[in-house]
Image (cartoon, rainbow, N blue to C red; front, side, top):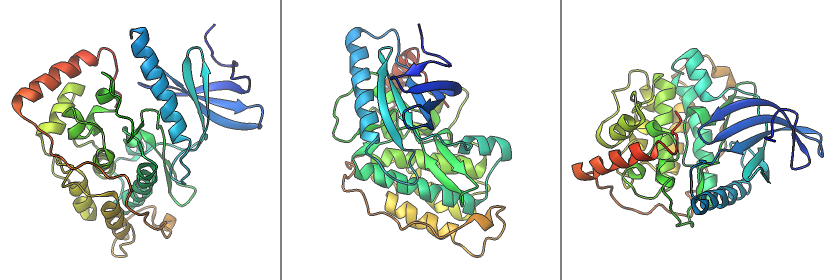
Length: 331
């Protein structure tokens, strides 16, 4: 029988209610009966039409990535407590944070003020620095994976490392380059090249753009069209970014060689956040001194330029359309 509300996972995690669902899994509110605390449990959804070999590859890689993410300890990264194998799929047990996502805030309030976005962005940048230093890529940075706690000096937390990948893992599969969200996927990933630290920073740039403008820079009606826009189009000119414009432009540089590094982006975001000339933000009373900027990751991104020829673009579109049947790209 499939596990559901009231079921116990791994002999200790009692599932209470479903709190979210996406292309990579279902998230449950659960209670850890051993430690008497509430947790979030993510049931990883793996495609049912894979061959046994493909299924095993993805299954093992998911376990590996969850265990890698559990090594991370940072105030802007959701803590992973445990990884459980049940019903022939992995379940990730993590910190439960009852706050809205940045996606929720944008949907509810529209564009946010630049200093607010800068403070959120600085925390997520430092979270990525910590992950990259540990050799871990997030690979799905987007507003839906950023939690924002306004009651704690505007704390921002990066969640869902379920599609993360270690720098040192050279294994590829047909799902690797389609995992993530089309409108936030870096052009080098769409171009068929491996994910690198700079790819996460592109996704951060798209996230900051949406937070301050109220709409994503490359989202189109269909995922394939969004991927083509990432490769071919410039983002629409911003209207509300103000002092955030330089950092957004630097993060959304299509050439990863020319893209801002995390250290450069963090310094620019801190400057925007602490700009005393901007007193318009409704959250100004929540601003506190930011944490020191972490050093540049020891694992460097390879320097190369993506090839974007028309023939390759056609091949990418055909490949993506075929693979989307297998692996849904969530917004």
